[in-house]
Image (cartoon, rainbow, N blue to C red; front, side, top):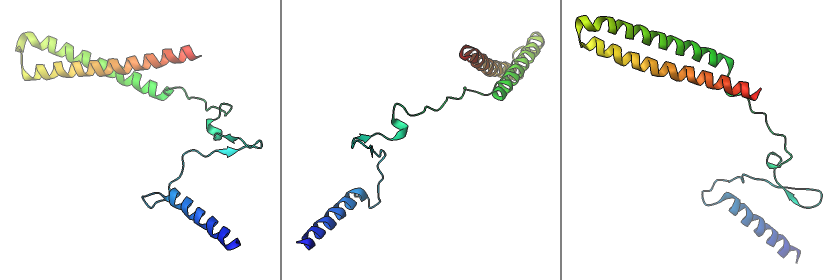
Length: 132
């Protein structure tokens, strides 16, 4: 009788291990473990409970990044202005040349990237002011 119970327990454990291993032959871990409380009721993991401490969200962006974006954006807009001033001065004398077209394209690209950097910097600054 005891041997049959032991055999049944061993067979049951072997079946559980096979289910845990799965078809791939590699043991699989469950994503969620539940703990049983003192009252015998299963509880969710600590990080998923409502009373679990929440991590504080860091403010998006750092001061260094904002300063770098401000400097880079300002410099790109400055370069775009210099390129535009140069091709405006040369256009009446030389007309449409390959150099002029390259300057126009460069000025447009510099302006767009510079404005995006400056706008993002201003947006983060305003967002920080609202949070405080």
